[in-house]
Amino acid sequence: MLEHFFNCPYCFSKISMLLDSNISDQEYIEDCEVCCNPIQVSFSVDASTEEVVRFEAKKTDD
Image 1 (cartoon, rainbow, N blue to C red):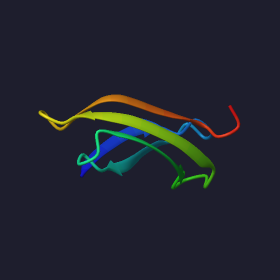
Image 2 (cartoon, rainbow, N blue to C red):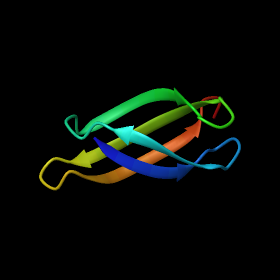
Image 3 (cartoon, one colour):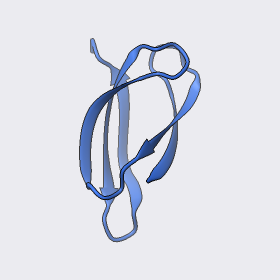
């Protein structure tokens, strides 16, 4: 698991999520821990380095 920090697209608070590095491409919805709005999260992890190479967090109504 990788901890990744970013700003919520609704309240702009800095939050973190644990990302599963065992699956290279993922997309799911998770609520902001501050404002509780749903965030559409998508990311890619490089399997060889286990680093996040792409991360996007956006409002679900975009």
